[in-house]
Length: 251
Ligand code: 13P
Image 1: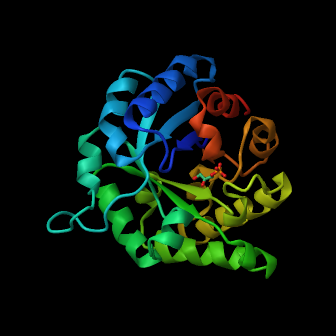
Image 2: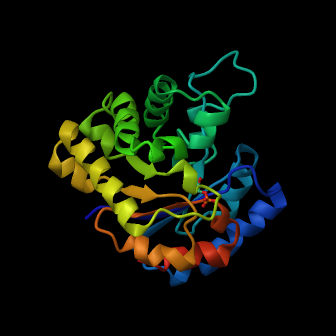
């Protein structure tokens, strides 16, 4: 049975005190969520240490939103995978469309980042997804396939145990537009097939694939009911503990 995951991507939101309060509220409400659903909060770098303290001993896991593509050294402003592991992160998101779009994140850099994160004992939540123009041109399968091949095909079956894929259609992020459950399932199944082509059916069956893009308590149930959707990577709705937990209750 593959893992069910609901992960909150806080993006560049909340001050540190607000973030600590949010993390504590998530912990406080987490008891109602079935034990087989993994809860993760992904916070800005500044929040990681205090949030790690706030969630200590709880079922909530900690993730970063990015990491450096270099191991260490003279890279001003960067934060390494080893640093993330040292503050208690168990995960890092990589390849979010906002990083691809605004910060020049390439698939080649994502290979380096993924390698470093795995080497430091972090699990990776790798984001893939097409933008509106690509969707309208009918290129969404091809775009996701290329992103997966360019990054994940460089890794091993063993590495895949530590990699979660998040499908995030860029046109659905923060727009209020959600992919329909059918649209999402179609591409999740395709992503799983792309994983199977390289790593085999057994690995593909064990790979958790999350949906991201305007996921909220009102639509999560329908999305999570799909065969190949194993949870969500949540943006806006993760900033309210009740909504985040409401989504986690939707399996
Ligand atoms: P929204 O849930 O705000 O659309 O964001 C999705 C996302 O980008 C999560 O990484």
